[in-house]
Image (cartoon, helix red, strand yellow):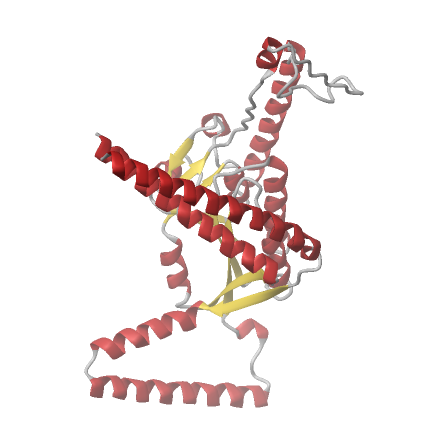
Length: 355
């Protein structure tokens, strides 16, 4: 057992060295890539969910059905499509087709939010592209997943969704896992909020926390001075001594932010009892329906598959082109993550053996 731990310690030392080297490489690559990021261009990827479902159905039929029956169905389907194409071509020649007679379109975008709402930038581009042709007969569906984060970034993200409403295009938000705090700030703009039964929603509140090392510095006779112009330029600090007056002002600002949050939710979801739900609590999907935080219990998969029956459904994703340095950086980060996961697994096994 002693030899095992000695060998394992050597392995860890080597791994730490490797990861340290990777981190240095990542830092260098990040510095190089940041010079070119401002000029990076993106590409808009659009995929038809209808076509994807048809391909899946066709693959399943081919695997399950008798070969002769499958071929017969394929032949009949091709004949049907050919007839539909002829009819459309004939109608076009006669000028019989009109925009109002076309199938409605559903545009799907994804927002997977972190504390900084990093997905905001591609979402802005996606919404801009969609609004160039979306009409009141179409629909935008946002598959939203976010536990919330910074107030100003999520406020801007919510404002981007508001652009859709201002143009009169129906907006639906689907929550399969979580839309809390800033995530719910975005969701409440929707004409319809759909959530999975155990998705987490709500958290209509504001939180701020920070450590303070003033007493530690004071113990070792280290002075830290904060110089400001303006009484409330800095109300709370990490290293300086916080005053009761500054603390009260900080709490006042939090309360005002919370008030703005409640007013925002109340404006777009007047059916919600803010006194009951704006407490910072969260609700699972089933309970969210009881307090009007959502409108329906359903997964995004169910909703979109059903939409394919009478609409053309497109997923829209704006992706930034990555240069060589950025691709290498991503690869290095994935390698480091993989090593960390292996460490955790091995350490867990060691603890189990030690017991």
